[in-house]
Image (cartoon, rainbow, N blue to C red; front, side, top):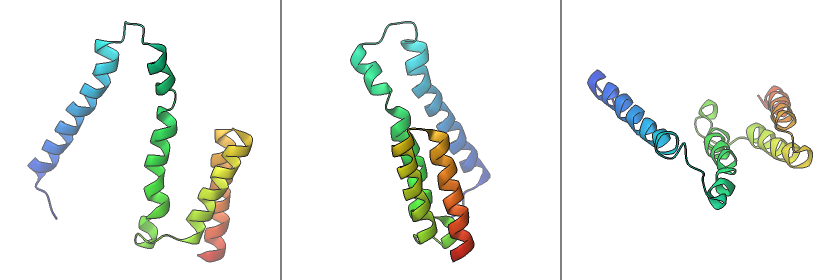
Length: 109
């Protein structure tokens, strides 16, 4: 499916307006008010919910393999999860996942 230049720019502008409105709802409308404790407690989990949503499609359906799952990426994801669980350190988890991915791609191509 191909889009015209006007359609692409319309999509970009509409997504930009939507993103602005989502952010403005927190920063502009209620930015100077104290939020209830239950809202703050739930907002702590936003990054934990967003990161897997961004990474999971790249692990399960990688473009490099034509959308087919492969052992290298699944093993790297498992190593990342295990390192993150045991160390509670993002850099250790990301580093171990990257090392495992490079090693697995070297051996399995």
